[in-house]
Length: 307
Image 1 (cartoon, rainbow, N blue to C red):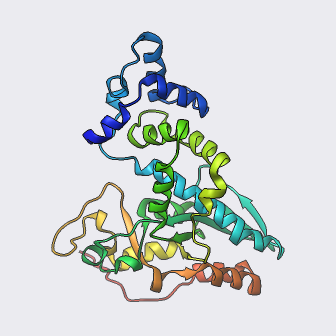
Image 2 (image 1 turned 90 degrees about the horizontal axis):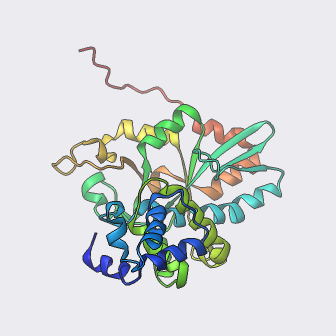
Image 3 (image 1 turned 90 degrees about the vertical axis):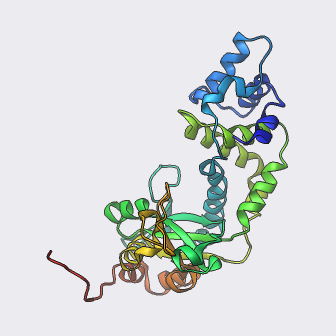
């Protein structure tokens, strides 16, 4: 962990962090919360936090935690601005985002359904041109293992991606300006992990949106920047252009690239479709018309070596 961050965290005692955990309703299911509360009870001097939970500290900020906030913004905006209007036209919307699966929403009508996973592209891949052959402003990532899993369990899944490369910075700036318990735990969750962290993070995010949801969702762009691509098309891109998935170790720009998170990178302009176009197609011709585009097949000559 960066020394400057350690100094910021150590400016408060574990008693301050324990009080913040209590104030935000975070229980002891998280190991770091247990250690903090235990230190308050056993050490009257209430030592600096690094001395108590150093084994749980992270070297870099937890992007997974910070992504929870941008992801929740996207889910709320997509539901209120882009799915609510479909209900007025006879579609049924099922909200599954808390179920912990790859479907956040399902749109239903006439016995057909379209499963949707909501995503955000809030950070630009600056080296996209050199690594995957796409311009940074035209490149968004899709998790390879999630797309593969979706193709097996929910073959008609589509990703609705909010493409706004300024959103992450706006969210971080807002979060850095928080005060009190919310600010203390923003730093704690950003730099400390351990068993039970995800559930505790979800509790924090839920409480945060109870208090600041209107302001946070307003950070998303007013104009529609939602783009759609099916999990099936993502996998087709991976098969046809393996360079787009550098985490697999495919040589890019003369060298191998390996990442912990294996992503398939797609072109916003050429390989995704505007959500408004998908919604219009559903309203005009029904969900089946969208499903037919997802399931579309073409015959092509592909390499099939026998040795």
